[in-house]
View (cartoon, rainbow, N blue to C red):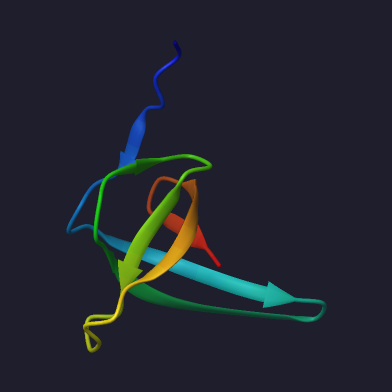
Length: 64
C-alpha cells in the first residue's frame, strides 16, 4: 500500500483558487485537517466557522 505524503497540515494557511474560462479567484483559508496531493481537504475562511471541501493541488495550494 502506497502512502500519500502529507503536504498540508491542520491549522496551516493555504491559498484556495477557483476559476473558469477567462477568470480566476483566490483567497487564503485555514486547513481543517492534514492531506496530500489529490486528496480532499476541509478548509475554512478565517472569518467563517463553516468549512468547505477543496482538493489539494500542491504544498499550500488547494482548489475548488
